[in-house]
Length: 184
Image 1 (spheres, rainbow, N blue to C red):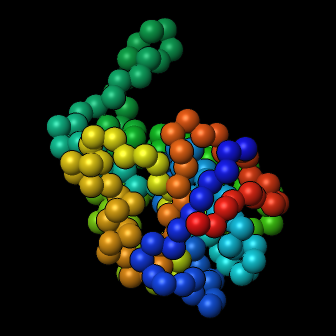
Image 2 (image 1 turned 90 degrees about the vertical axis):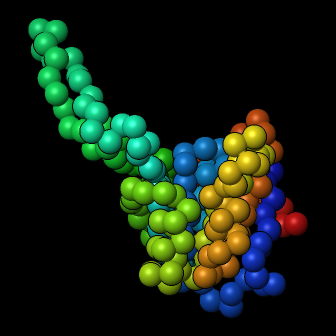
């Protein structure tokens, strides 16, 4: 297991008591590392973890239909692309959370639609999370030009944000009772 590092980005210290943790995920290695760190904090504090995946439908696909091959090679129109993608994201989230089902932690997951940074910031504001733990990977050209969801959370979240940094190409193991992290 590669070692990850974390930093408390937008507050001078961790809150004294953490009862609810938000973990935004995109199913990447960085998301798995963030989940490991959130689990470590949750175990120590007795906190619940809310894992959220937010996706946005590109404007050019809003009314598109996805066709599926049926019996005998026939094709049938399935739900709209947005419905299809939501169902697919839900399946991915269920697979992501599978290792945590028997962890003894209070972990829930949900898929939301919309612009990820805006949706997550609204969620933090509306549901009053005590802490947000988010994975951060090396930035590519797109993130440098447009900014990243992690940057928006660090800058604008109404709660402390822990950013878990994972080096490019690093592997993160499945959840364990004793995750290895190094505080920066």
